[in-house]
Image (tube, rainbow, N blue to C red):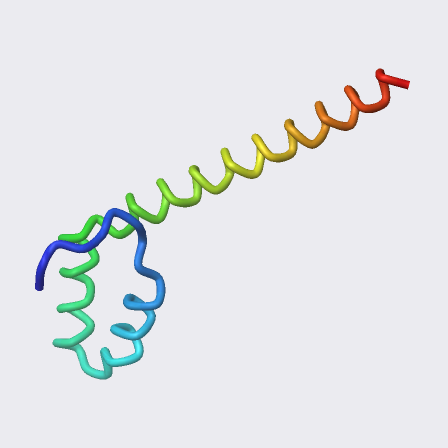
Length: 71
C-alpha cells in the first residue's frame, strides 16, 4: 500500500473497518493505522478545524463590532 495523503482518511478507514470481519483483518487494520499515524493525523485535522472555526468567529465578532462602531 502506497503513501497516503497528509489528512485523515475517514471514509477509507471506515470501509476497512467494515471489511475487518476476522481477527487477522482487524490486526492488519490496526497495523495500517499505526503505520499511517492515523491518530496523529486525526488530531492535527481536529486542531486545524478548531483554529479555522476560532478565526472565523473572531473575524465575525470583529466585523460586527467595526460595523457597529461606524454608526
